[in-house]
Every structure is written in C-alpha cells, then in structure tokens.
Image 1 (cartoon, rainbow, N blue to C red):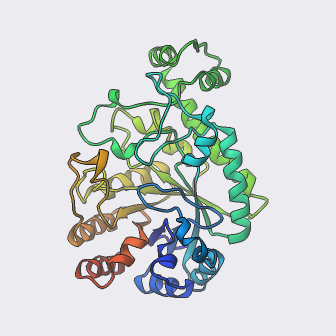
Image 2 (cartoon, rainbow, N blue to C red; image 1 turned 90 degrees about the horizontal axis):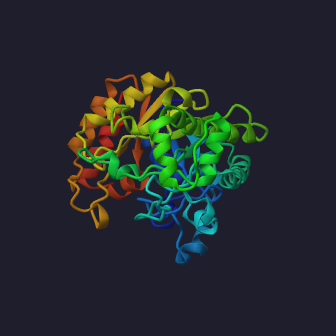
Length: 377
C-alpha cells in the first residue's frame, strides 16, 4: 500500500452535487496521482463537523442510488487504497440520546455542544458497542484496506487551542463520579467523588501521572477492543487514527494529559498515524505541518501521513477574530508540501476532496492540483 498521496472524502458532494460516477471519481484521483482515500460511507456515515457531511432530506432520494462498494472497487482497479472511516468519540445524535454519558470538566461543567463539537471519552462502553456494530457491518460490506478511526481521544475542541491561549482556561474531561471511580478501581488510588471539582483537585495534586497514564491507556484499550471485534470479519486489516497535531511541549503536554493520545503507547495498536496538521486553522506557518508530522512519525516508529488543508476554515461565528488567515494560497499549499517532502513522513493527505473538486478549472485550484501531482515524483 502506497501512502504517498491521499484525500479525505468526508461528504457525498462528488455524487450528490457534482454527479460524478465511481468510475469518474477513480479516474480523476488516478490522474492526480492519489494512492489512497479516507472515506465516509452509507455504512459508516459522518455527522456534520467543520465539513457538512450529513445528507439533507432534500437529497435522500438521490442518495439512495449511491454505491459505496462500487467506489471502493473502482479505486482498487486503479491501485488506490480505501480507508473506511468512522468517527468514534464524536457522535452528537448518540450523545443526545445518551445524556448520562456526557463528560464533566474540572470546573464541574457537563459538556454541551460548542459550535458543531461535542465529544465522548473513549471509556464509554455503550458508545463503543454502537460503533463496533457499525464497523462490523461496514467492513463486511466494503472490505477496506484500512479502518480509519476518527476522534479516538478524550474530548476537547482542539482546533480552538491556538498559540497564546492558556491551558488553565480550557476544559479537561472527564471528572464525572463514574469515570473517577473507574480510575480508582484500575489504579488502586483513593479519590473522593463527592464533586468533580474536588476530584479534579485531588487528582491534579496527587495523581497527575497516574491519571494521564490511565486516560491514555483507555484510548489504547478502545482501539484494541475495536481491532479484536473486527478481526473475525476481516483478517489483516490495518488501522489508522486521527492524530492531534500537537508537540508534547504544547500546552504542557496537553496532547497526553488532556486528550489522552500517547504516541508511544498508541503505536502498539495503530499502524498509520494520520496527523491533522491544519496550519491555517491552527494559525501556524506553512512549515509547521511537516515539523509536527515528522515528530509523530519519529516518536511512533510507525507509518504517518500529514493532512493539509485545501481551503481556509474557522473564520466566522465563535471563531472570528482569532488571528487565522482568511486565505490559503496555492503557493502556501505548495510550500507546505515541499517542507513535507524533505521529512521521514510517509505521505500527504488533503482535507478535503470536495474542496479540490470545487476548485478545478480555476487558476488557484489547478496550481494546487499541480503541486499535488509533483509531490515526491
């Protein structure tokens, strides 16, 4: 499987809006030099996030004719690998129907949806059982090369953690009594669960390292549970995950302490680390994606791909005025690819395929597609 160049297909616009067939999509991707796709599907659908993924009622009739297996097969005939993607710890509809599973932060606040985001911790067995059921059916139907697990981490709207922000102002989840009791049972420590604030204070003062290790272990355990459940369906599957684009030095190791992603631990259950290096969202220069992805590649000892934005995001509503650039030029995109080409990272990925389709035929879009075609060629 070649990881040189991929795209994320996080919506159905190629079919619903652009009215392309699976063969036309596969031809287009082959012409661009794409070697893999990370795709949602009818079997493994996505809720709306920064990308409008959900199918509207207006499009339901047309959507019924979409054949995800036909797309997967068309890609395979051209040597393009298929990553079947499902978001694990992000599911607003499931969370709304199971409010008792919502996480609680160190201030005692129960999580509520912020913009599009609300997350669940990876230790929620009810959610894992639901997602495993979807994955078992999806893998059986699609026979993917890789299963890509999105949002496999502890909750937090990481895209809002920008340079200059203070970690102390950010929520850390989950200090609910039930979660703290599970921590105590697993580690043998004694933490009062009278209130989340009290639990957070005791853990922070006495048991910070044990708490971090337990949280990171819960992320690993969730992936291991998914792998074990899918092994009888399809042996030899590879597994990729959404990986946060954070150095351990960022926000005093928030990537492990807050979000529960320990790269060294995850390497036991992850074959491919997909690093969400969205530099415009994170208000970083074009050289940054290569650095953060290379750091994760080296620390994991596993394959890693670096995902780059094709269009600017998070400019309106609650995100307005946070210092993000309102544009993402073709030169900037090309520069990010050039920096990446010089690293040990196995390949690039583009977020999203729809952005590239929409830009076809424009000078800006063709320059970006040209940069992709030249990447490591």
